[in-house]
Image (cartoon, rainbow, N blue to C red; front, side):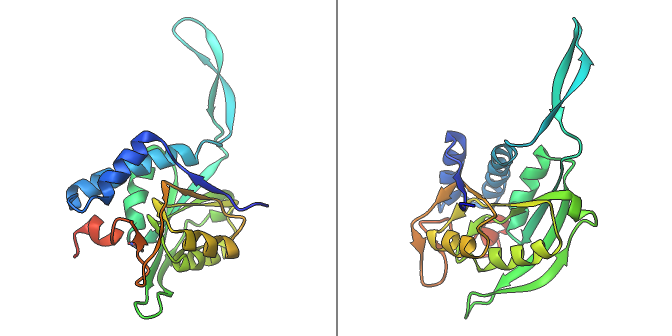
Length: 211
Ligand code: URA
């Protein structure tokens, strides 16, 4: 199967992403914009959800109306902490999704992902997973997260981010070619510290004002 990368080029997404990148966008606006972009990403990522036709009564007549097939259950898995910024917006659009968390931090010297928390919905084998993290940089965290999440046996996995570096995409798809990536932009490259350029800085710090 060819590894898939979907770049969401919708003008609203691109405009809001540029505002997110801007150094003068402060925490309150950053959080609001990230939530808005997450809703738009959720819209694109769920494009292939199956529909079923249900008879309904309108004020004028009856019809078979398209509704989401109820057996298509979803779980959104947030890679903490920055994943929370995408999770909140996605839940607005998919309120019936259950939520899992995986806590990973980047060891500064090696940039390797170290796990400190892992909690999933109990019926995860019956759910399609959306794994969310705003930044796909080296790919170390995303690979480690999806390694662990595959052990839980979900029906399917999609990876959703705001920005991806070419290096991160290559690394992720070398380990998980079966997991499609959805992103608002493929940026230029990583710097020596593993930051995405041009990027938007540290997504967690900008989201929570911790710098
Ligand atoms: N994580 C971030 O928050 N920003 C980057 O640029 C890379 C990883």
